[in-house]
Image 1 (cartoon, rainbow, N blue to C red):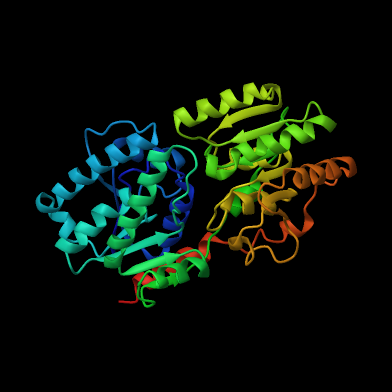
Image 2: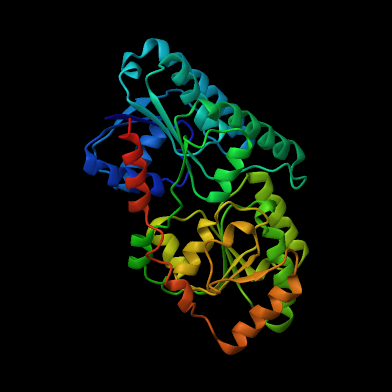
Length: 379
């Protein structure tokens, strides 16, 4: 089987889940090709997960993507270049399947047009999130994100296999008119091998950790509201933020932190992955994840499985994952309730989540990768 993986805009993305799936696929001996730029190729090689058993269709003359607006403009430019290849690149006629790691517009435009041109090729994609129209943050960016999501849903009707991570997302697609025959629930997973191997960072310890995008919808300002209350009891309480975001949004956030007098209580680590990410998780006492909207919440599951007491809003997607009180759940904006529970945890020094650790082996990339590949072989 010859598989083309669309990596047009993935050079800055979290690649480990995709590469771990490909590593498992390799036991079936497929021929793996990527569509991406030279920066993507360098990252693949540097991670050393799938070896050298892959090929690249290179998109040249690409620009660095630093902001979400640049992702839109550069993403469209790269997709146009890729679509022009359909006529001129003969190998595109020889693939059995094109794979999209996500259903965002910049990763499904090319497969959509390839599917129109090459009707025999199968198209498989992962659908892992919805984009509600929420008036928070940059209004233009939020509206464009919602608009592009609506366009993506129209294009996805051409896909042959849509892998969803939850029954809620399957029901969402069914309500939008998708055929149930195309939708396969695979679930989600965590990087359990890295989690098991990781050791706490030397000379580093954090009272609380947030891991995720620096984005208002992720509850980053809610963290500060909680921190202001906790700080009254513990003036030197340290919150670590691990993740990245749009340059302007990060700047605005840091300015707000300074205005609230919290600069000395917060440390930014930037984006981390693999063993390094989990070593910082294991160096933290508790985990705060006050996101307002999630389809699964991988970061939360990673921290819980690592054994950290975790605090989150009571979102519907969590109900099928945490059935044995593995997470402290609260209603949105209950800053007082969250802060008081944190203070209680610190007074008792109850920093081990035994129930959470039991979830470690339940969410495996091996199961998901096998289910996906067996679906490819179905027809």
